[in-house]
Length: 635
Ligand SMILES: Cc1cn([C@H]2C[C@H](O)[C@@H](COP(=O)(O)OP(=O)(O)OP(=O)(O)O)O2)c(=O)[nH]c1=O
Image 1 (cartoon, rainbow, N blue to C red):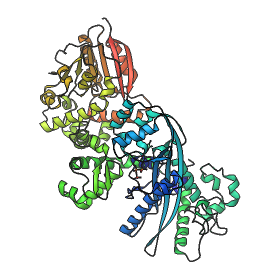
Image 2 (cartoon, protein in one colour):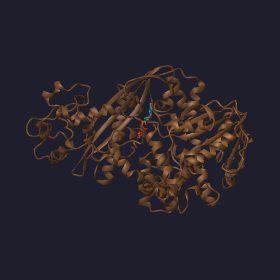
Image 3 (cartoon, helix red, strand yellow):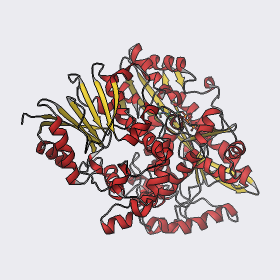
Image 4 (cartoon, rainbow, N blue to C red):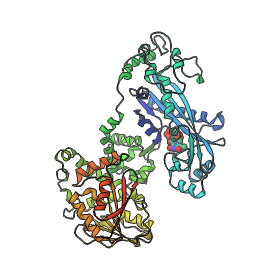
């Protein structure tokens, strides 16, 4: 692929992204760049009035961010990284520069100034090449900016405040995120979308191409001004000889706006070299080494992520197990030494774990110490409303062991609870296998967090307002029942689950007005008669069951349904191309854990029809779930 060689020029270098922005990190890593993240401590408070244009402010801030990181790393390690990338995104409207809002009122001020108008988003980028000369840091700085025009619709007061209360505006220039909810405010954009999100990738690649493949004078005519040169464009013997792998050094005589000097003639080809200059020699040697990079196959970034992905999961599990996010929810920021003391762990190793968490965007690091990101506060703190902590711990304590036996599951065609956990598959959902209260609660909390993620979308996938009674079979903690009750104030919802689940259900019962609409009933949907209801719900139940038990259960539900009553079925299906990866991963999960299997949308539709539910409608929820609604025909 044409872009790979350009990005490939960075692969053998120590590249640092001087930014705490999770968006920049994602854009660069999606492009296959390998880098470390060291957030800049440069305070964004340059005097805006002293700049001739807003973009100059963004470019200078980007440069200062990168230089701050380069010099700190050089001081700390006595060795700077090879390349430091800094960026700064601003929004401009009516001559004003908008950065990140300081509070909700500020976000309101910004967003109302953008309402109904076109504005510009500028991202300034600095690519700083670092060299160490006699222990001193020396740099070559290349900088550029990109402008994207964005037009907002007229925004009502109500919409503005709803958006502000979502929390999304707070860490974003101009107070919005075009890549998420903020996308709904946008009427049109002209220019690079990623530039708005914080990093103009296309311009960055062009800049790299300019730096690493400076055109020879005779090539200038051949290179389209706005294209990213591919290796082919420059692949000729003299280019290979000339290296072209290190950035061309700036011609000392050339001024700032002149760009990068043309290639020096002679053996070196594209590099301007001073005889006896050790930096130039090093550069030439490096150029020789990197020459082969052009002929290498594309770097397997996705493959490496797959190979090493389990390490990232385990690091997250460990930070959760140590309750790092709970600690930082209570007191933040905290230094590594205090966190290590609190969790009773080695300082050096705790620091490595915290830095990893920072690099993947779940912690933030400043001079004062580490703090939770918004994401961590929402999902990783153990007792937050939407916590996924127990789901993570369940993966750590339970699913992890099962997955280490995946090869047996595949070879033998059976699930592996016995080998991994000393239990039979059906025991996992039965009373017959006593679990400790803690294990049971962990399972229930895990299901609770997971169900809450999509409960609202499931509850509203169809208009259910004409039902008066519903029964959620295997409804566990009542997380879905609660959303249904909130959404449909006239609906009475019964949650049916096994006695060992119901024993602990009181820990999850809602406290709001919807509590009066929900009742919990203990029972086994395979043995006991089902509570009467005009809507039955089977949410994420059938995939855990083998075919004979699916038929058994569906015929019991069908037998209890009155004509005109309905069944709402929620499952991750196998055959949707967009969700293929996630669904396929879930199907591995099912085959290693249970005797069930993931089924296709067509199979579920047929199952419903076979059991007397007709007029089956299907809605997609999130990335993975299908919601089916079938109506019981008269027998
Ligand atoms: C306009 C807009 C901005 N943004 C983000 C990109 C940037 O992260 C942020 C602008 O703030 P910046 O100061 O550019 O960056 P930052 O503070 O997030 O990170 P750092 O200074 O460490 O590099 O706003 C979006 O994510 N979406 C948008 O639509």
